[in-house]
Image 1 (cartoon, rainbow, N blue to C red):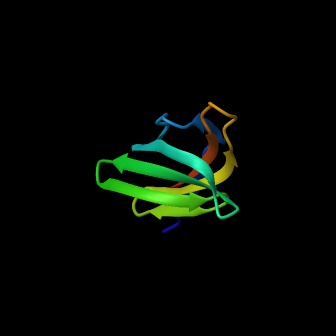
Image 2: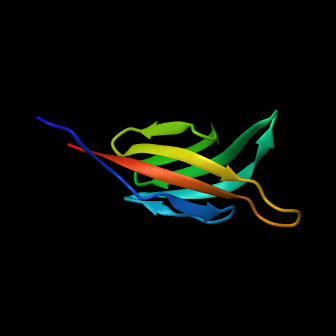
Length: 94
């Protein structure tokens, strides 16, 4: 048995948006900097997944049966604006 992996193109999304990756919807809840590290709080929802996660820039979260979501970059908000993130997703195909 071989396992293949397919990676999405980077997706740039603003705080408050909910991009989709396969059967998962990723809500961008917070974007900012804490103790000198850029981070984002994400709400990940799917048929069998309901998870809130705080990821640092460059961090990943493996989602069993779905794949791995990576926070490639955090784009801090300008005053009065919304922050943005760049995400990639690598689906696990069996």
